[in-house]
Amino acid sequence: MGISLIVHSGAGDDIHDGLVEPFRRGVIEAAKAGWSVLQNGGSALDAVEMAVRVMEDNPTFDAGRGSFPNQAGEIEMDAILMDGATLNNGAVAAIQRVAHPISVARLVMERTPHTLLVGAGAEAFARSMGVPLVPTEALLVERNDAPPTAGVSGSFLPVQDTVGALALDAQGHLAAATSTGGMRDKMPGRVGDSPIIGCGAYADDSIGAASATGRGEDIMKVILCKSACDLMAGGLFPQQAAESIIQYLARRVNGQGGIILMNPQGEVGCAYNSLRMGRAWVNPDGEIVAFV
Ligand code: ASP
Image (tube, rainbow, N blue to C red; front, top):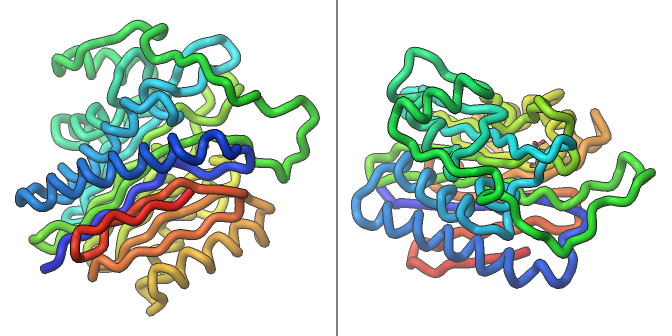
């Protein structure tokens, strides 16, 4: 079975020219890391976790270090990881003080009877698992991209830089992962689509895998990732399904965002209706292709 990997680093209307190169470098670095896991016989779950961890470490992106603070100045992060073989999944929401929310999500999946832990409970669980806590200041990053101006219309999608990854391993299993600091200037306690199964990510070996980015309040209304996987189950190629679901997001709820998709054969697709979206995938010959 051929292996496959695709990553994204979020969709936005103000990913300005100065961000293009850092985005490109960031998704390439993540794709390399995930690909090397797969090449060494690692599982799809290991590969998506690794690719997302690399992007959580990258201060360019709104995940892990570099997450946008909320209106109270706190960093509250959301992440989900899903195993296409079993449909098991784990997620955290509004978690603070961890460098890699995606790895805590994996621990939720593997070490608890639950699928989603939030806030202080998620942090306490991480601590109980030996995950080191980091001060908020270590996650905060000085950014030179201007915040969206007041009064910006609802059709403008500010840079969010949520990250995600999909993989197919040599055993034919799919996995999906998504991690985010959430929308810029969000209210304390706000949780978007990212940690919600079927919305921010989905993976099922029999129909495909998906990871989303964009305004979570829109994405949740249309269960974006599961809906896109269902389109692939209905016979669409990943690129067709990606374009179709993003058109639907826009048409049905005036939503803005992007999605990456992978079918059970490892073919990939990506569509977005913001100005730019960072993404990279690995061709079967190992060549990494990146666009922003
Ligand atoms: N979907 C994320 C959220 O709403 C943000 C993003 O993808 O840019 O929290």
